[in-house]
Amino acid sequence: MNLDALPRLALGHLPTPLEPLPRLGAAIGVPRLLVKRDDCTGLATGGNKTRKLEYLLAEARHEEADTIITAGALQSNHVRQTVAACARLGLGAEVVLVDRVDGVDRDYRRSGNRFLDHLLGAVVHEVPGDTPADQAMADVADAVRRRGGAPYIVPVGGSNALGALGYVRCALELRRQAEDRGVRIDHLVTATSSGGTQAGLVAGLAGSEARVHGMTVDRPRAEQESVVDALVEGIAERLGASLPLGAADVRVDDAYLGEGYGIPSQPMVQAVELAARLEGLLVDPVYGGKALAGLVDRARQGAFDPEESVVFLHTGGTASLFAYLGAFGGAALSQVT
Ligand SMILES: *Cc1c(COP(=O)(O)O)cnc(C)c1O
Image (cartoon, rainbow, N blue to C red; front, side, top):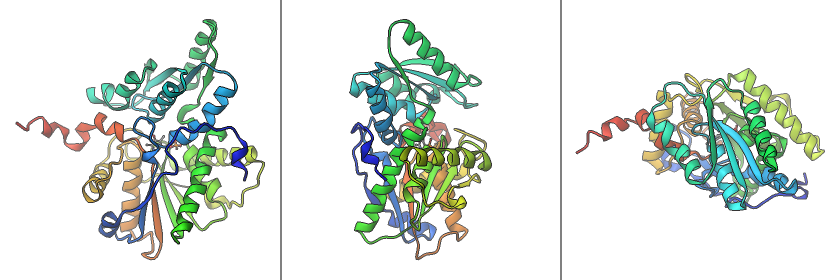
């Protein structure tokens, strides 16, 4: 796989660390539990979209775009990382924020990533929850063109085959790190939503023993599997490689989605508290928290052999914790005198 042949901008602090989680591992019966710290990619509180943007914004540069357009939920980590990258590269950023999560409060509407988008200087278009993001982005691009600008659209989540190459790279980086310390990765657990992260990992780990478990935080299992499958195919096409994949290599678990995207669940709250209190590790409530809830629960059900190593991919997103104070008993904080 020759990933280096494609243009890429250096935006992230890479490689990210691979660290043991001994206290959390002991608590859930997974003695060989590790975390791949993609929350430490460095871009305005970091996260997994940075690796995708290294490829996507290289293409935008190549096309001589001056304004980047993307979309996501009000608390999108993807949008915040895109806006931060634009600030660094001197590009304009116009973003569509879809008000798609029901029952949210004032913190959700103002704090966390929403505040950071504002601080980082984005032009923000907030649209109702039923707005198709692709159409809204195309409309913004038309407006940019009409005023003489050169727009480039980054898809939701940075998930097309080009963006997903960032996670093929991550998989290769992880394989090297594991090899250097004589660890065999048996299981890799990640949140999955727009699908590029899981697809890239599946492609990059093809032919190894590692099984990638995508914990969906967005769509039900069958739908999510077809999203990821299509991206894996796109990656293979881009790389002009046939990947040594079996049909079973894309695995999605939807048992921890709860009531839906962005809606807190009790297992999520408990998993986030566990990581915070046993490891000093901050995990986000929308993605990593639900994925970790899945890892914890599957571990307690005996899904992992004690001899096996399990890697939790920390995809970032901790800025959105501040948009979810209510889910973590934040109301009680205001009682403190
Ligand atoms: C976007 C995101 C994910 C999901 O990655 P996809 O490539 O969209 O599936 C997981 N965790 C966090 C924190 C994210 O922001």
